[in-house]
Image (tube, each protein chain N blue to C red):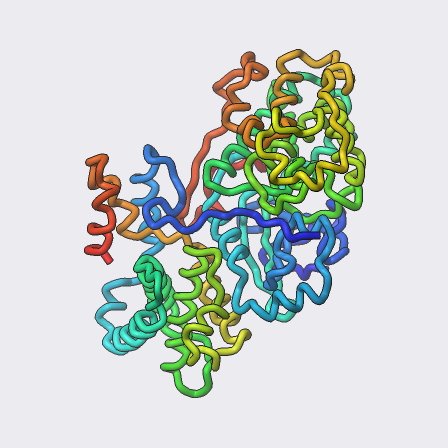
Amino acid sequence: MDEKPQRFEKLDREGIGTSSMSRQPMYKYLDTETGKRTAIRRLLLKPELQDSFSQSAGLPSLNAAQEEEEDYYGVPCMTIREVSLLKVMNHKNVARLLHVEPDNEERFLRLYLEYAGVDLTTFFKENPIWASDPKVTKDLLKQLLHGVAYYHSVDAVHGNLRPHNVLIDIDSSKVNVQYNLLITNLQLLPDTLQSNYKAPELLLGSKELSPAADMFSVGCLFFEMLKKKPLFETRHDQIDKLFRLMGAPNEDNWPGVTQLYGKKLSEYRQLKPKNLSKTLFLSDVEPAGVHLLSKMLCLNPNKRITAADALKHRYFADVDPKQQPKTTITATASSSASTSASVNP
Amino acid sequence: MPEICSELPDYDPYNPLPLRADQGLERYSSAESFFMAANPEAYVSNSVLMSLRDRGLLVMYKYSECENFDPIVPFLAMTYFDRCFSREHFAPKLMGDIFLHDVELLALCCLTLAWKMRYKTFTVRKLQAEQPDLRVVTRMQFETMELHILETLEWRLHGVTPLCFLQYFEPDPTWVSRRKTISENII
């Protein structure tokens, strides 16, 4: 279990799930310096476990890990890049990195990430009426897209977008209740054994996380906001269900797909895309929303809508532009602790 | 299950944070002091520290030489070294009784960190293959010294340097073609 450093006080009753790395319960902590709530993400100082996607997909074999470690000296390159980038990221809808603490004995880093409110699944369960309000859905999706667009604007990808990593904080102190959304990147065990928010190119064998892959995950989350259930219940038949819904990839809808994934694709029948509104029972959703969803779930990553373009989609035409969050980035000495961009209570 | 790779940007000396062109100058100006040596006047006037710094500079000069030499790497590494050494005036005791060797390891690890920020293909093992005398440094010595540097720098490796201001003081849109020459002068 994570030890409590002096600066951070464990909020005992506020467990948030089980760590996918340590298999231990994860808790929230109070940062006594900033008054913010935080949650810990661990990054091993070994190369084989640093990628959250590979963790949620299962650990590599011991032999592979040993071989990789043999070739590795010093702190992993991607760990250095990820933490140093998190240090300068500053956006209202992205969890701030408040503190980094190495555990030299066990060779991992504790990243204290800002935590606010509850995760998306808990929000649906605890607030069924608010969560059913189309205006709330639209507002939350817009905030999610702002956060994802920010990641992409700094040439980074999130790579692990799922309900556990989308936090909603309700501010009911004002006349109009406000919902603040925060994207974090914690390694919590997902409800199912495998991540079922992966883009088709990843399922077909691509090893590269990309902004387009993030947008597919956003599409899955958008559906979940609309229907309060996952688009794909389990991952083992996700690709089959996706092709039944969106049609199977071919050279017409995804030029070059045969060369990239032809062998894997030969296992699947050629299917035509279905009407999303009917198939997914989205008749209560405005047509612009269904159109945006179809753009996010587009099979071809090159044609999938970007976060910046999604924010300009007509689905958001009636949302007050004044509510757009500020985008800032800073590198001042006190930035992680005291900048004004905050969604905390 | 194949490992899935997350792309994280290479260090860009001209826009390290990174920022849009219209929001850069003010941000870089306010952030620059954090990326400089602490108490620079006291640091440069301390002859002992400066002679140790010269030693660090020699280490970087020697080991950064390679086929595709990139001057940004030792330049960035030297800013890490100055930020570390001006704040702490010491290096962790990892190389036996001779302090100078610890300073050399400090300089070497500033260099490996800068390389890792610039090129994701860089590994210490490749460097050791090219520079056989570095094989005496163990994995744990590399890791401990790199972690010491990262903690001293508070993990802020997106160094703001004079190169960040080039685009603001060279308004000519063709400046990119002369960027290399100007950068060489700064370095």
